[in-house]
Amino acid sequence: MATACTGQRLSKFKNKGRDPAKLRDKRIAMCVSLRKAHKNDHIMKRRNITLSSLPDEEALYSDLSSQDQSSPASLEDVIRDVNSDCRLSQIRGCQAARKLLSVEHSSPMKEIIDAGLLARFVAFLSMEDEPTLQFEAAWALTNVASGTSWHTKQVVDHGAVPAFIALLSSPMLHISEQAIWAIGNIAGDGPIYRDVLIECNAIPALLARISPDTPIGFLRNLAWTLSNLCRNKNPYPPISAVQQMLPSLVLLLHLNDKDVVSEVCWAVSHLSDGENDRIEVVVRTGIVPRLVELLNHDDTCVMTPALRSIGNIVSGSDTQTQTVIDAGLLDIMPKLLRHSKPGVQKEAAWALSNIAAGPSKQIQQLINCGLFPPLVDLLRSGDFRSQREAVWAVTNVTSGGTVAQIILLVRSGALEAIVNLLQVRDPKVVLVILDAIHNLFLAAERSGETRGLCHLIEELGALDRIETLQHHENQAVYEAAHNLLEKYTNSNEVLADSTDDAMETFRF
Image (cartoon, rainbow, N blue to C red; front, side, top):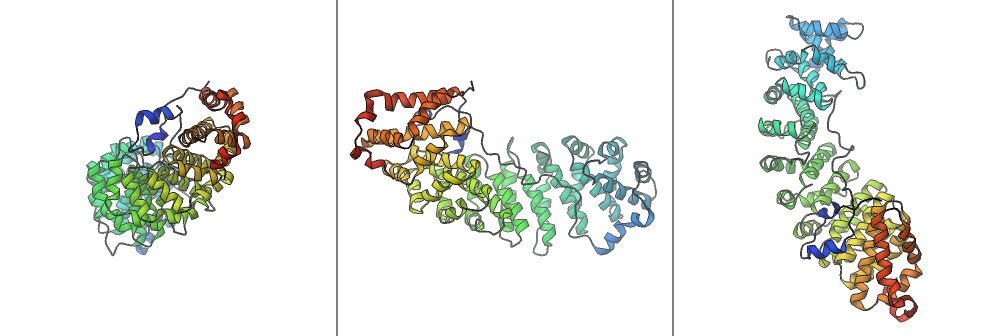
């Protein structure tokens, strides 16, 4: 039998003004995994890059090896050239190395590290009189840092971090951009090296490169690196670092380039994925209206992280949620819930479920904006991930809504829709549905309509399905189904005594 564990998921919902003990008693003990903010749809490390600011003459010089070699250099050639005292050979060796390191599945990273070449590459970074050597060495190190955590550690341990930060101020834009990319790869490895970069004052050096004259391609790479510096929450980035970055992130968010805006939205999604005090730091920048505006963007590469950020913010306090509502989120929500991409539907339903976890005033705003019908449509025909989030939205309304709001929810078809989902295999979803039905009975008790609800439950076929769940392999599901039947159907034979008048309240 599966063991029950307290709901991590519940920590993402707001319960201000409610008795925590009662909420715990009402909730069925379950183990529900939170939607993770760090997903494969946002790349943490990159290699094989095309720099936007590489001058034509530098590009020609950078490809000098193609004139000297009819075939790719061997590892032995690379080691010999990098260790040479001849500048031209060193450049050729660094270029050949970064090309070998760009191969996705057979890159000789370990061999190059074992040969002691990283120390040479790092030494070349400080040679201001040899910008091409700086550039090629930086590129090679960038590709090494794009590997595993072990590879990144080797780059850091060889002293590359302060060298790359120093290169950010290079007058050669393509060298500065290469350093930005390397720092982005190091930051993308995790919180340890992210914090190493922050402690070495990488953020001020990065922000100093933002100006009205900065090429847009350069800004794209810069925004991606800043986004990686916002990643991870074990531990979170220091608040001081967040406060350093936010003004520039807000500025970049108002550019018209979708790639820059997308990266900044991802950064905001990372920064807002935390406790209410961290969400508040984001909200105070005044960024919320722009995030809501971006939910209308044609490209999902912008819409998705903007919606993720909004979902995080509405998981905060009621006041933070109201800020998002006041910015016009609910007017856009029906379109998002009916979006052609299931991923957008799921994120929208998740955000809606957090709003539904607020006070009845905010639930009423959901109703006023006509959000129950698209929510029910999602329960009926959405993909399973979207249905799962929609089930949470329904359960939250039944938990915190008024009797009138709950009756309206039932009349919209929500009860019928969640009853049809009682047959899904996921026991966590089944438990949430049973919790919603339990909440409905509590509302029916308050309005004296228990018999009518029982009749409706039977009419929808829910009674048979709940009875079947008493044989479920999951212990928590069995107990929840059994307790529900024991309390509301077996005692006093309420079904036999129900009348048509009594059930009218809960009819759709």
